[in-house]
Amino acid sequence: MRSLMDREKVILAVCIGTVLFYTTLQMVVRPLQDRTREVSGQIISMERSLKKDRLIIRKATKSASREAYYRDTFRQTGTDEESVSKIISEIEKIATDVDLRISELKPAAMKHQEHFNTFSVRLVFDAPFEKIAAFLEALQGAPYYFSIDELDIVKPMGTNSTELRVSLSLSRLLIPLVQSHARNGMEKKAGQPQ
Image (cartoon, rainbow, N blue to C red):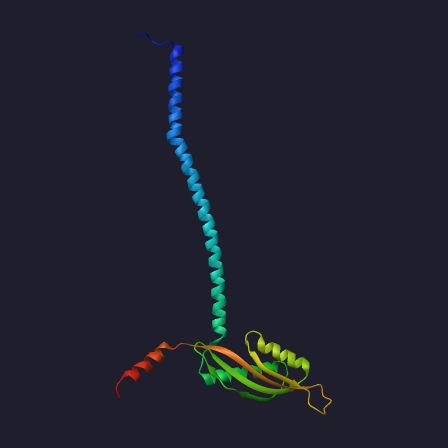
């Protein structure tokens, strides 16, 4: 076998280098590129998922704070009698704030539902229309949220006064506190022989 000339050695080296380069490219670089693309796609997918999760968390946080506000606003913290007394005090405070004099204020029948109690109050007063509107607006707004069940406005006969006679029936829903310890104690007492 004859020995290779310098030119043939160079050509052989270039061919071997090209084959090694191609083999390295196919076996190492291309799989790395494919894996990089795959991982980049997964990262983009996870970022989208993370954005959605953050949005859900923000909405849940807002919902939880809104739920806590309404739960605290409509919670019945005392007995039924204490709640009625508090409602009457709130109505008297609103009437004082709008400079209105209530001539008759008395609690009406209370209704116990499964998850809430409805407290009703009847009242009668004389006032000009502007004060009536301010009073009703304050009753229905935050933080009181009274519902107007009945409203009767009449102008007293034979008077030239600007005052109107108002008969009003209001109600308010309150969610009673669940007192599981008290209930458990009552159940134990009821189950014991006497």
